[in-house]
Image (tube, rainbow, N blue to C red; front, side, top):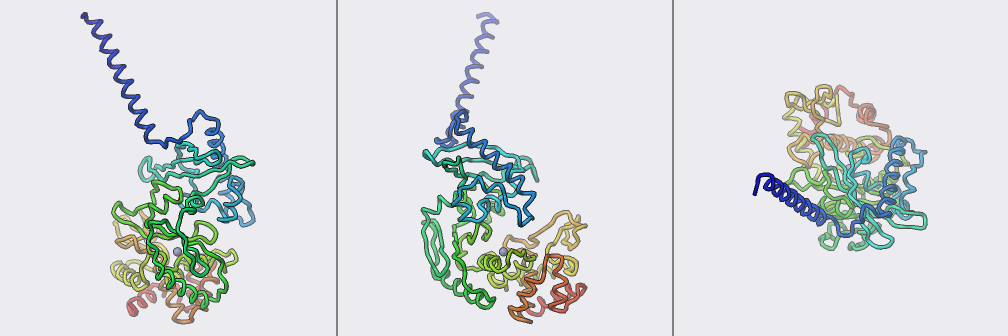
Length: 414
Ligand SMILES: [Zn+2]
């Protein structure tokens, strides 16, 4: 064989093996996809893709108007009527897990056909901070074909049909069949909640749906969110998590949530607030009377005391909500010195510095003037900036004394 022929043969062999590798890669990718994914050349695919883009644009327009209570969001038109009725704001689940998602980089994964009227779109969002191409989440959102075109439906609406159900008082608990529901703990929690409602002066509660899951991964899965960046704190640490913002009178919690009433108190406060937004102190009330991430108030106070003793440079007369980390790695109350805004300055994920300080304030008010004084703090503090004014008015503590009084109280009491 002469040189020329040999080279031609070699080139052909290389092309053939390259094509084979490409075909293998295509099959590998195809096998990763749901076999019901629609071909991207199909008309329905494009109809749904366009619909999704229009929905995102409506979200973008609405986002700028969010603070105006009179504004009627235009994106509601994209949802099935039953979703608006059931959730109030049908975007709640998507938004409380990723907001504003449409501003991130997106990879639209495809459309799955479940039957002639039910489809699902799947899409992923990325962020380039703090490192490039970080996956924020993969969302699966069902769509139903109606006479009025496609309409969005929350995945939870479809998934809850197969959940177990248990009614206690005005609360309906929903959980997957694999979840071990602690009925005794739930009964005790409902009694505590009723006692709190009575003391707070709330009579008659609207029905509440309480969703329970083994962990966040499972919760997100049933919400239609796979691969969320909010899933774990570290690969080893499963974080207890609850939320009362997933829709009208709906609460979700990870394992053990049936024994706690923190999220219920949020709902109760929402029902009596007449649309008023409370300050950060609301978290103090929910934590103090309803615990936080499955831990008691004593447990949180003890950790806060140790932290403040270890960091005497922190001045609570400057900031009652955040601690920061300065360039030397020391905690500080001074945001201008900060390189990191550090919401969890303790060594684990169970504490929230700002919540714990508000819990101390809640206890001081409650001991001095009972629930009436706690309620005054809630209703008479229009925003976080006014927290110091309320402390002076209700507890007689001037701003410059706050640091010493709170630290002294913790030292004496815990
Ligand atoms: Zn809370």
